[in-house]
Length: 132
Image: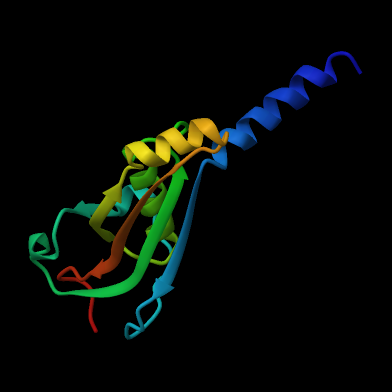
């Protein structure tokens, strides 16, 4: 029993850290569904104009995470992972919003962790080998 407690605490700590970022999405009614891809295959775009090939918007992805336990990179990783599960191979980044001073002060006073939020559009970029 004594050796089980440190293992249990380690698992709980990992779960707590893993739960610091959550994603939601809304499908945008594209022409079809696509098989999931690896998150490493999801290319990041700053604007839709950066996509040079024909593409389809699949979903609007929103993300939120603890301002003390996450950073912008964690939010982008979470959105990239969600996009991959939807079969998107591109992600057009939108705004990432940091909590303001008032939110941070209120967080200290009320023992609440303000949320960092972001959003992006998951897209399926067609390459020359894909047919419609």
